[in-house]
Image 1: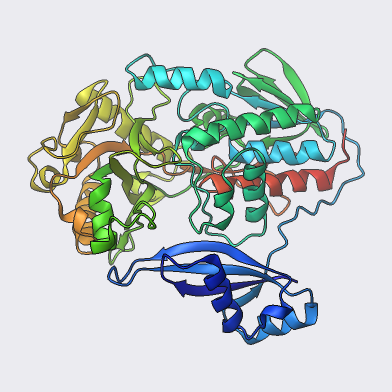
Image 2 (image 1 turned 90 degrees about the vertical axis):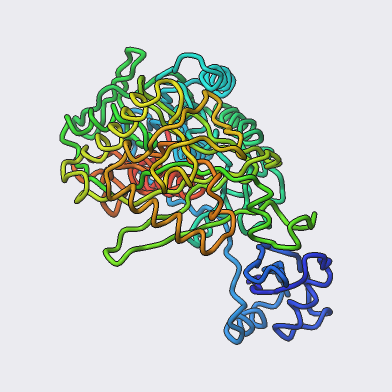
Length: 527
């Protein structure tokens, strides 16, 4: 029963030995009792930038379960370490057909990999291309070329997260998070992700990781069909029949639907099949770019150039008296704003950074929450709401993205920045961003920017650049499931991950994929 000792605050230049010594002292453990002690997680406390501290948690094993149990009970900063193991319950019912996993983003990858490791030999259908071709097509579009509707920043091997900052944070304290991190390391991610409070892989390293997962899956008997979308689905008897874009019709013992938040045509197909869907809240807004040095200065003050400190990043939020929120999302230190459309004649932005986070600019989405009460109660009304914003952006500035300084947005006098060089590779054009959004969204963006300026100096800079729109923060639809993780209206259909409305980010999607695979395994025997 190893322990995690939390809240060990130390100066940034402290050695691991000093950190573990303080942890032992904090729970009354003598060095001679210790079998193993090392740093488990580290975060930065820069609330007082004149006295910056690293906040560590320390993994501690004494080899004495009763002693460990008593420490966990006695000290508020001590807790039992999660085991971080998958514990399957294997079913005994043999069903006709194979398990089909639709989508090969984090949820689909980890669902398929988990199934394959226990002998289920799943088939994966991914509408986009494999990572090698995907990189070529994304690079072409980012350089001003034609959009490939099926292979882009939203679709293809690895999902949307592959072309992002590769953040591996999760708000849920689930022991499977540790499983996911260890898997990423085993496929080539840096080991440091195991002991960072806010780990990230970066788009450059994540691309090799997803390729490794695919190769492992195939070696275990799984099959991956790229550039193959789900076109139709029907339930007959104890099986589901899936029609794919390659012309095949597959009898499936189960279908794990891990389609991602941008599979709008699939949502439309499911609605037409009377699969139970619900509209859900999401958020829309714009990307803001600052100089990374300005973010560092705002957070660290006179310590901004300390090489021991990580690149500055932030999370900001504000909620008005009516409950509407505006917040930062997907902050990318040293990153770039990227074109993330998946439909013709639309403009969509997202953020991306490499592992080193060594770009000149920092960017983050600044988004406003919207609810079915704002865009209508129809199951696909949120999708239509976001699509219309994306089309307005395209009509406003064509192939370039609408952009404006913070000062210009607040004053209603659009202009491009004299300080920030835009990173959006297809080019930007000065535009009135208020023309993209309903008034309540524009007004809340302004309120948020002014609120954040009181918290971080860089947000008071009128030359910071807004590039719009950001509309793919999460799925506008929930494919509702029961306690067995199956669709309410179609037995054997397992909605999963971000597209189903049950995850938000790489880690939570991967964990949801594992749990969904375990639910399938409980219902049926391996092939």
